[in-house]
Length: 175
Image 1 (cartoon, one colour):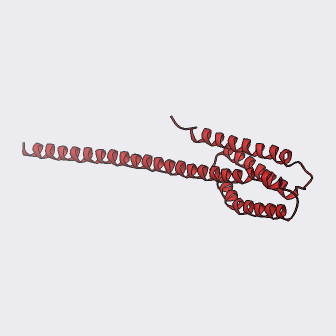
Image 2 (tube, helix red, strand yellow):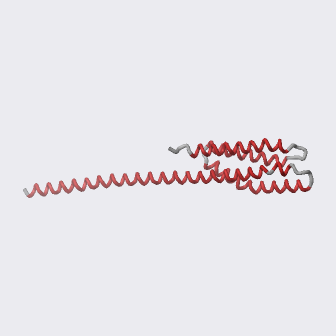
């Protein structure tokens, strides 16, 4: 009988070791999958936060440019003369200074945003540039309210469309 007892003891020990190894492999695989899922969720949250920050920046810059554009008719309706020329040049300088951060925010959003957001940002940028080009080509005999009214409305329409696209894109995957 001593031989069979030793054999049973060895078989039991082998079974216990094998069961332990199988359990540890399962636990290891589960831990790896859990870590991978956590890393994926963390990357998705970081991307969503980065995109949200880009949205906020481009909307902020678009509103800043819009505030400057709203002042254009006032500046251009001044009586002709050196004061008007100085005011136009000063306003153009302010627009150029604001244009750098606006351009950078648009470029970042074109890279960070989805296709529909990128197209909407491009439209805002295009309408913004159109207003500035109108300023550079304006003459004293033009009716400023007609020249800029249409351009400024188009700009704000494109800003509103951009914000809508950002909203739609940001909420696409929410449950």
